[in-house]
Length: 216
Ligand code: C5P
Image 1 (cartoon, rainbow, N blue to C red):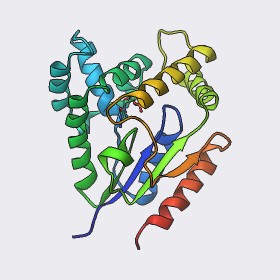
Image 2 (cartoon, protein in one colour):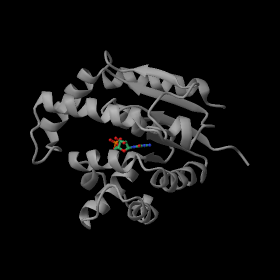
Image 3 (cartoon, rainbow, N blue to C red):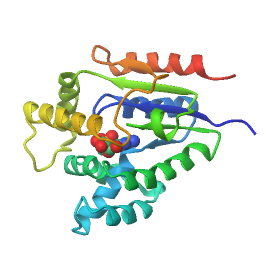
């Protein structure tokens, strides 16, 4: 049996990792899982049923009920769910429940592209290629701000550049500072700083890194 070809992509919020992951998945004809959506789905389920975000037993039950095939980015993309997801994501048993499902997804076919915060370090430490995509907080806030103008994903909240920047800093702190699976590059990850790149340049750079790691 051939070993699945797994591309692990990590990085902070609004680094461009989502777009890169989708495009790499297309280029290599592999299924793609945005693992952020799994944490968002747990947060969404808790918010919808009026449950607290910090009760681990309830959150684990919600995590067990997640269907990876039914994650709806249109519903889960809203800002408040992202915030709530990063709170839910500090609980170890929630993480291990979701990680188990993410690993199954990664290993069930001829390969996959997964993006998140801990793919190269925890979910798929044996991935054939790992990318750590980053950009300065200012550049990420600027991209998010433009996206908000176009798509209105911050419905109902103050969407000034300053608010977005301070949110990005807060989220970085929470994701990098948590005890379980903090956001950090795997030792063998390729670092891709997209601060000065447009998406096409970032994609071409990522593509050549992946091609050079792919067995023929
Ligand atoms: O990437 P996205 O913004 O959708 O992720 C939402 C939150 O889910 C992140 O801020 C992070 O706290 C959490 N997350 C995580 N591990 C992952 C993916 C997301 O902790 N692999």
